[in-house]
Image (cartoon, rainbow, N blue to C red; front, side, top):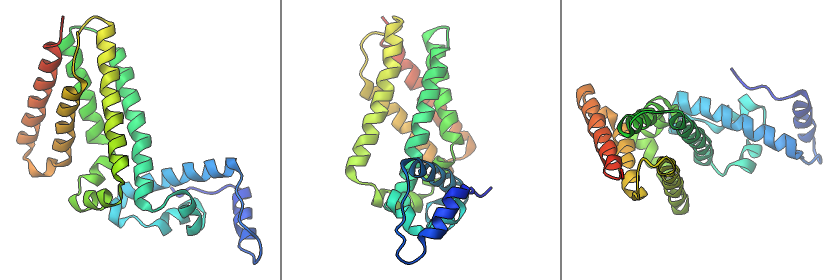
Length: 222
């Protein structure tokens, strides 16, 4: 369903288009517009992919001029990255909260953590977008190297938080987060290339990575 701007925003948009009338948004307006751009962007990226998504269509749904869009995002790839960052934080918080509620032997809990991560990767619409090779290549071309480094740091902190929880319960001793992160990076790559595998091959590959993940943690048990 298209997002509808508030009456005040509509009125401001109409009056700001008169000659000599500068556009002005309050901080609350800016926050609302950004939130609506993120929501509309998610809907359009999910339906049309990265290359098929049109900034004009997102602006139409939100009810802002195209120039306003570029005040918030340099290009549509920047919007995609902002949405991906928002969803990444949401998923990681959910996974850690889920894991904190788990009990039982370390192997079972580690396996459930892995399964939850697979579930998130398989169900998120943005993962399906970047699974398209041409879309992924287009996104990489517009992603600054420092942003890629930042994503790696976030993933590592996520693993560190996970391991810290296990250490606090006395379930594991010292463990190298980079080793755990490497296994999960392979999982992400596997999901992104799922179309290259038969269903049986994909399931078997996920199961193998799960086993390696659990064994790596079990090896760190005191």
